[in-house]
Structure formats: C-alpha cells, structure tokens
Length: 366
Image 1 (cartoon, rainbow, N blue to C red):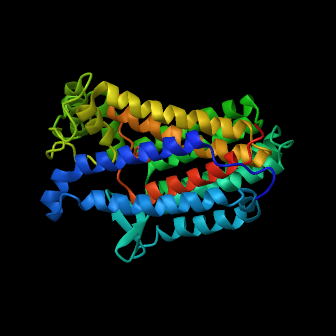
Image 2: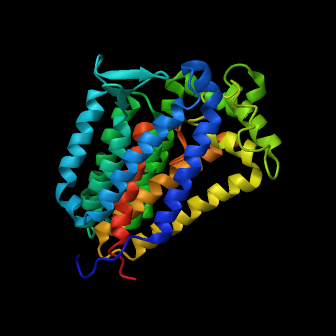
Image 3: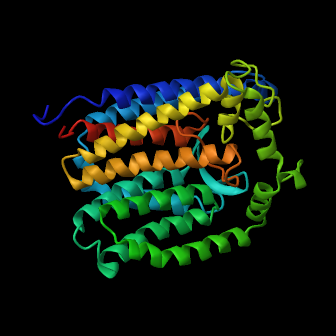
C-alpha cells in the first residue's frame, strides 16, 4: 500500500450501503403488484435490482482499490469508447426504443444505456482537461470554449435519442466542474442567454415536452393525460403524513403511478414511510454530498479534486431534479433517484462512480 494511501471514507461507505439497502426494499415494495401482474412474479424487479446492486458493489469495491490516478492516463480513450457507444445507440437495429427514446443497446437478456456511461466518462475526461489547463481556463478561447465544445458534442448526441433529463444532468455537472476549476462568471453569463434560448427551442421542438410544461403549470386541465403522473404522485405523498401508511401499504402502486419503481419511487417511499422516512433518505444524500465535497477539498491534486466534485455533483443534481419532479416543483424530466430507483445501467454506473469517489478519499490529505 502507498504510504499516503488510507482506508476508504467509512462515513461515505456506510451512507452508500444504507441508501442502497433502502432502495432495494423500496423497489420490491413499489413494484410487487406491477410485477405480479406483468410477470407473475412479485420479486421480478427486486431480484434484478439485487443482481445489479451486486454487480455495482463489486465494481465499486474494485475501483475503490485502484489508484484514481490511473484513470488520468486513460481518460481520452474512456471518453472515446463512451462516445462510440453513444453514436451506436442511434443506429436503427442497434439501439432499442423505450418510452419514445432510442437510449438502449441490447446485450443478451440485458440492455445498457450508453448515456449513463457517457456521464461518467465525460467527468473523468473533463477533470483531466481542466487539471492540465488550470491556468488557461480563465481564457474564453483557450480554456472555456474547448471545454464547452467537449460537453456539447455528447449532449447533442443524447438529445438525438432524445433524452433531455440525462443531457441536463450531464451538462450541469460539467459546468459546475468548469466553474470550480476557475472559469470566469462572465463566460457563463455569455452562454446563459444562448442556453436559455436553446432550451426553449428543445422544448418547443417536441410536443411531449410542451405537454410536460403545461401539465406542470396546470395538471388538472388534463388529469387523465399529461397531468396524470404528477397528480398521482401528489396523491401518494399527501396521505403519507408524518409517519406514512406503513411499508408495503401504498395505494398508488396499484396501477395508478406507471411503473412506480423508477422515476416516481420517492412518491411511494413518502406515502409508505411518511415525511420522516422521506427526510431520512434526503438526509443520507446530504451526508453523501458532505463526504463527497470533503474528499474533493482534501484531494492531493486538482485532478482528484475535480473528479470527486464531478461525481458527487452528478448524483446530487439527479437527486434534486428527481425529488423536485415528484413533489411538483418542476416539470417531469424522466430522471431516476440514484441508488434507490430500479435500473441496471444507472445503478451499476452510479456505484462504479462512487468507487472512484472512494478511491479519491483514500488519498485525502486530512
């Protein structure tokens, strides 16, 4: 063991395992009725979640033991491979269409989501780029613009699927990394207008996105159509009260919330475990954020600092978006709750990313 290497952050490790355990329990609770009806097996989604969690934990442990400096050397090729997969998913016959988006590639009985790999691959590559150009990042042409171009290329490919939610998480995470690396606020102000105009264009170009906006503003105008999900989500959260209706006793999982084990799992959690249960889960995510920022602050080099910041930023942004959606604060985006929602690529890649974060924590200077 390197003399500067320590044990992984025990607070961070325990928090990850706690959230993951809660997620597995809630996947079973929220999906049992749906999977019994659809697959004649109440444990269908829960068993797959346990499998994905096991694979993810193996990846997390393995990556936590590998010095994070290794990924600095291979960052370019990691990003290129992720980009190839992101292009491949757009090819008819290769990419699979689910929920109106061509976001999946089938491999045997399983499928992967290249955009999830791209989020992590881009964080690894951008951390290296910013670490090497620390002094140039203050320059718009030499630092900020090239970094922005690296972000917009995969974002454009993700939007061709289309998957606005994943694209927003990726871009926001990368912009946070650039700001932390020293990019000028004036640079962000210049692109803010263009970004706002582009976002309006993206929303206006797809009728379903416009419906999501109108459903967010006036869900009761179409309670059985575009407003259905958010109304049912609020119907779940409201009766939960302080202590909830009890684990397994949700009513909204009885075919009211479509596939409640994914995007709206927090609604079921709040219904069954109440305000205290929902707050406890959010508190665990706050601990994860705290320990992730701590790992970033005390990393021995800028690359490790930006890598840790990117990973904890990606997860935190997803949590904020997901919880905001299910509580009716923002329009529906299709973003899952990290470590809690059902998902193969999402869960496995999140745990792998946390393995990198734990690796950075092993070299903490404090």
